[in-house]
Image (cartoon, rainbow, N blue to C red; front, top):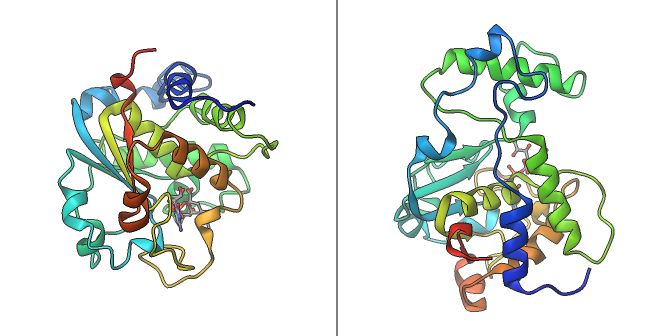
Length: 252
Ligand code: NCC
């Protein structure tokens, strides 16, 4: 793969991983039911221009960080899956501008449906339509499959080992998403600080060392983000903070 410079990787991200959401007319998404399903405004229009953004991973190491006020001071804050702020705002803040959830979660939230693994696509898309009917005013998008796999290609292009063909973690997808939407992105506890712990999530008691990922290429995502970090290694160690430049800020 060869060691690429920070700028080369940023430019590859900008050119090869364009942000894309599923739209009416894509693949099987046509017909009356879908016409009512997708939000009418684009993601960028819904959010407006964003200068500083925070990406808050769900890592247990956020506990006792006291990062809440710093996180909330950003123009927009991205959180993942079922990560709650209730009872944890001192450490993680309480502003949530965007939430990125994996498809499994959307289906599990719908208790009437059979388990995700039986008919993943069918159930997922039905669950999406139903959610949209229940919350029509909440802009809710589906990231395109091409976005996931283009991001996987970028991780593989910058990794010496051959990766298993599993999608990037929701965290990595969210980091790349915010690099598309914001001028500057601070990511919290993706690269572990000195608070590094076996606690998987800050909001649950479950211990599992999930900071390395099982199914997702998380270890390799982390080494890639480390190469893109514009902050200091001291910021990583003491705050668990990585600072990334937005893709609009670089000329390729
Ligand atoms: O755990 P999860 O992710 O919700 O975490 C969101 C993102 O934060 C980063 N992370 C998390 C924990 C940790 N100790 N270190 C971290 O760096 C990762 O980038 C992670 O993606 C997922 O990626 O969607 C995942 O979702 C969970 C689970 O589905 C949801 O939490 C819903 O309950 C997966 N766990 C299981 O399936 C049991 C997890 O593997 C990945």
